[in-house]
Length: 111
Image (cartoon, rainbow, N blue to C red; front, side, top):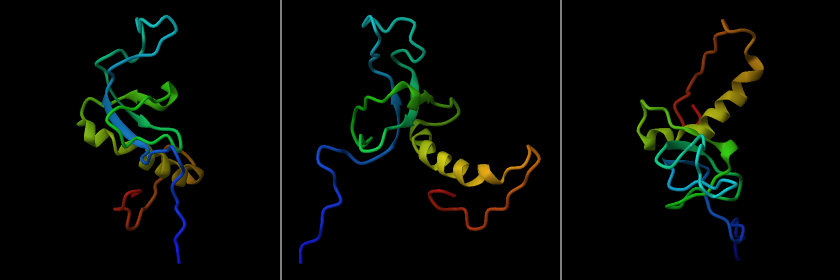
């Protein structure tokens, strides 16, 4: 019995990434005045099926941010998806800034 492939042709795996900007795609091609110029430490998440398991990724600006200065890039790389997952789980239950939440067993990838 043959198993079905769960892969989609011409796609890569991975969502989260972090690294250093090596090029900027701007309207005039110069990259001047760009909010994330070459050399900036960044982290973010790739759109579905575009994948981040690569040496170089080209990500949309709305999915990239400056990496926190107090984190190594490998630490920043794990934040995007797990942070979004936690926020989506908790946000509907937050009543005010003083709300408290007890998370039991929150030590996994989304914990």
